[in-house]
Image (cartoon, rainbow over all chains, first blue to last red; front, side, top):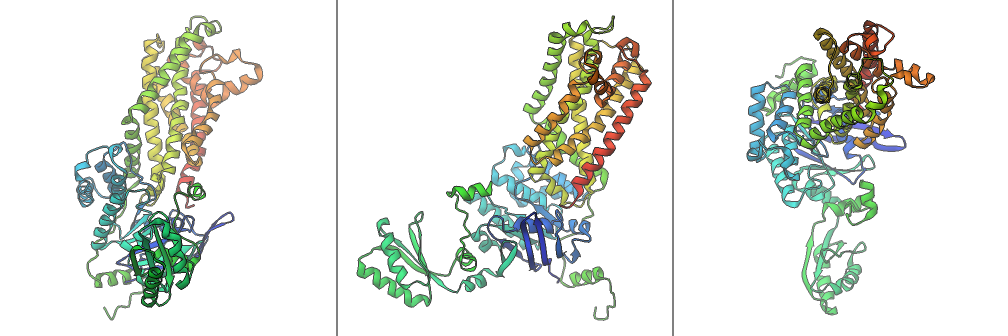
Amino acid sequence: MPPIIEATGLTKHYGDVHALAGLDLVAESGRVTALLGPNGAGKTTFISAVATLLKPDSGTLHVAGVDALRDPKAVRRTIGLAGQYASVEEAMTGLENVEMVARLFGLDKATAKRRSAEVLELLDLTDAGDRLVRTYSGGMRRRLDLGASLVGRPQLLLLDEPTTGLDPRSRMELWEAIRNLVADGTDVLLTTQYLEEADQLARDVVIIDHGKVIASGTPDELKGKAGRDVIEVRPRSGSDLAGISEVLAGVAAEPPRTDDDTQRVSASVDGGADQLATVVRLLDERGLVVDDIGLRRPTLDEVFLALTGQPLDPSPTDPDASADAA
Amino acid sequence: MTTTTSLDPAATLATERAAAGPTPTTTVQGAGFVTAALATSRRSILQFFRTPQVLMMGSIQGALFLFMFRYVFGGAIQASLPSGLSYVDFLVPGFLVTVILWSGMSAAAGVAEDGASGVYDRLRSLPIPRSAVTVGRSIADFTLMAWGMLITGVVGLLVGFRSHGSIGRVLLGIVVMLAFGYCFTWVFILIGLVAENAQAAQGMTMLVIPFSFISSANVPVTTMPGWMQSFASNQPVSVAVNAVRSLMQGGPNKVGLEHSTTYWIVATAIWGLVIMAFFGTLSVRRFSKMR
């Protein structure tokens, strides 16, 4: 089967900003591909190009075998888009929203009605189907938006940050819905800032930064690329965090990182198991009591850090970061 | 399969897909122009009629202004009207036409909001003619404008407005007003598409306020300074007001106009078509273009 998306050398600039700077990407059919990167990496620009909302300045782009730059209309028959904001109409019921999109996909009235009811069932919204969307929670709106994008049974579903702004429970529910779709055979390209999301949903992860792909592979392969395992320690007393950081610094390949929120210190190490034994001994000698200590594979977060030298996590407490986002 | 000689990539693709097993997807054709325009206009119309605050405010606002003009300014303006014409009979046809501007202001904000909230991205990604979305919007805005005129007309009758033209002429006046109004919706659609958000759109629509006040809608233009009169008598809103007023009140000399009713209707038609051709083309282009 040909790849569902094939992009080579895509560029797009707005003034001096290069949103896409020679992006090459192949997404295979029959799986979920996650596009991972920080704000401004070019994720939305790329998904907009695939959705035929914008025209790249140069490069080639094929979607389901169709040249998206030459025949965008044909591409629109194969895709479903759920953008960054739930674009459902508040003054219509859930069913009316999905039915409208179904009609726009070209289904006749009866089929649109039946298909919309099926979609609501799939997304667990049947009971709320006759209520105005105004009364829906954020998570329900997102699910409804997802439903609207797939009611035409597109071959490729494009999801731009599908769970941004959702509470953990709603996020899990949406993940579940996406997994069900994939099981039905729909190809999915999703963008996310959350590594966990990519890890949970995607078979292939493409990490992009500054409009370029900087790494791609399965989550495991990418973790392998970071090369090092991580020792993570949670002390019994928060006052020991500094002491533990010092101990880890003695064995770690890079300066240890302290997370004050979760009261953990973590450090990348070469030769995992041996180093863990050393750390345990050193902590014991210093009389530092720990609640939890372990060796684990790196998270995608750490992979991103290793690849770009910058953390991915957009810290919500950082005023600069939130100003950028706004 | 192995002897296939087809050079058509699409055919090869189809064969490969068939070989790979049944695909869950069926190729959709996408809605035609009419279905797409009606479906999207229905959305905007429901948005208006199912949002009580908007519905109430839109209706009350018009009624309030009509009430104030009628009773606050009416006495003062009466003196400069042709004898035999009461201010309320002069005012209401003008007020009906300016509903086009007032309801257009919220229409522009609505368009900008749909652009900012991702609704238009979804619609642009669908297999429908993109121009159908803008035409759908114009149908919706036209409907809301007609609703505004209906409310204004009823309030007008309540505060004493009476028509002195024949039924046929009054109906023609309503048709002229609606048709001109439809052409004008495109001005606000373009403003909404150009503005980045609802507030900016609302700000930009302030530019139409001079067309409402420097016009024959509320006062006879003969009371204005000479340099202003030439603009005030010939700008699109005024010619439409003059056509409608003349039709509803029994001829140009009854309402103090120099030219014939036909003159004003033709002028209105020309302005309307020029406005629609210009703003309509730009709106459709702007909406359909891949950024």
